[in-house]
Amino acid sequence: MSAPVPHPGPQSLVWLFFNPIGRISREPYWLSFALVWTFFAIAITVWLRDTTITPETPLPEAMASFIEANPLMPFMLIAFQWVELALVIKRLQDRGLTGFLAILVFIPMINLLFIAGLGLIPGQDGPNAYGPGPNSRWKRPT
Image (cartoon, rainbow, N blue to C red; front, side, top):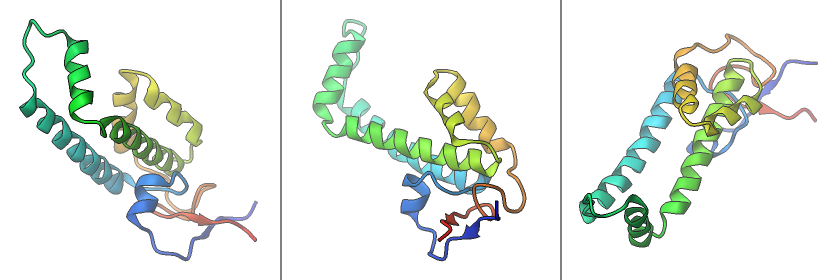
């Protein structure tokens, strides 16, 4: 198998957040997660300002009011999950591992350790099967 050839096009935020193909190093990984978590925290903060949670209000009722007050939140959660998955897959590929290990993000408690561990362990230097170098994507052979 020949070494992957770099993609000639520019890297974009769409590629970074939504495309699972390629490799990213630790810095863009953490910065991307920080940006996404900031947007998520803003949405939660707005909800908490508009909601009064008391001991008499059960959690399912509070969550129902949250969804009613923020009808776009389920779509935001789905988009957040996709971005998280794309970032984790690219980080796994930078380590030379298969993206199928990203399924671990769906296991509670393991997901936080997994995401943090991926952000702390350095990637492989030089080309691997998933891209020509960190922060790159590969071009399909013709």
